[in-house]
Structure formats: C-alpha cells, structure tokens
Length: 214
Ligand SMILES: [Fe+2]
Image 1 (cartoon, rainbow, N blue to C red):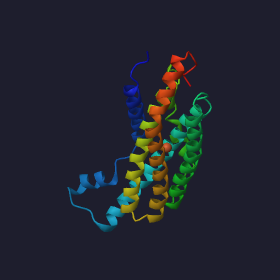
Image 2 (cartoon, helix red, strand yellow):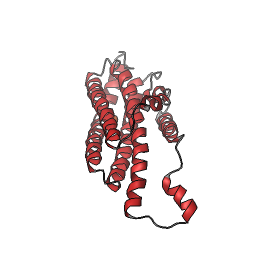
Image 3 (cartoon, protein in one colour):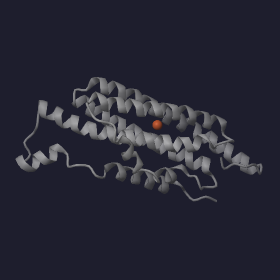
Image 4 (cartoon, rainbow, N blue to C red):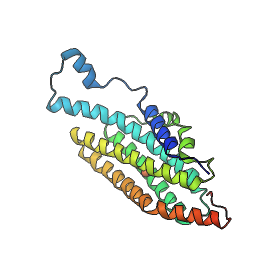
C-alpha cells in the first residue's frame, strides 16, 4: 500500500518556494529601513516599493506557471483510465499557457524585459517530478493531491500579486491577475469536488483487478 503522500507534496511546495525566493535582492523597504530607522513611508514611496516587488513577484509567478505547465503536460499524456480528470487537466493546461502569457504581458506593462524569464523557470526542473507522483502505484491520486496543493499555491500567489498591483496603482495589471486568480480558484474547486469520485474509481478498478495507476 502506498505511503501517505501529503509530506512529499508539502516538501515539493516548500522546495518550489525556496527555489522561487532564492537570489532575490534585499527589498527596497528593508534597505531604506536600515538607513533611516523605521520611518513610515507613504504615497509615492509605497507605490515605488510595491512596483519593484510586484515586478519581482511577477517573475516568480511566470516561473510558477511554467512549472504548472510542466506538471500538467505530464499528466495530460497519461491518466488513460480517468478521462474526465484528463480532460480537465488538458483544459487547465491550456489555461495555464494563457496565464503565463498574461503574466508576461503584465511584466511588459511594467516596462520589464522578459528575455531572461526562461532561465528562471529552468531552476525549477526537478520539482515537477516530486509533485507529479510519477513513480507511485496510485499515481492518479498522488497527482490529484499535488494538483490541489499547487492550485492553492497559485491562488495565494495571485492574491498577493493583486494586493501589490493595487498598492502600485497598476489597475490594468490587477485586472489581468484577477482573471488568472478566477481560473485557479475554479480549478481548485473542481478538484475539491471531483477527487473523491476519482478515488472511488481508483478503488473499484483495483478491486476488479483492472489497471488503476493512471
Ligand atoms: Fe493552475
């Protein structure tokens, strides 16, 4: 019987977070506080700080979406006995590709050069394998748990980005990010509703001696 996959998923998400947060310059606010004590910053200074962080976090979000695409691509070509889940994975794969494009568009709107984005995504290779459950005998269920965890990681990221865009006064960027957030929430909702049925199908297949892994 397979082991409880939750720790593996949490470690995977943790590794992803560490990968995304490495090589980050010290935030502007920290540097200023170091020089000026804890003088509260208002108005334009807050907007400037928000804008600088927003740009860095959007680059993380772009890497995050590339990671999602990598995981979903693997699943979309497998899951042969779970057509409904596979169809949803394929739909969300297309959504994730559009989300990555939207994030790139946001970076362009902030005047950021996006030519080095692919390099940032390259750092995360390896995490996908941890998150995909590729080697598990109950791969479909490990994938489901990983997808559900990853969607919530994305939801948290977009909520943070939306708040930063708001503080930066970048309302068009905020609206674009809200589109991505809605899609992630819808995917998380779908998974939350359908994972029990996928589990039921898995158990029935196994009980009938049928191939149940994917
Ligand atoms: Fe997603």
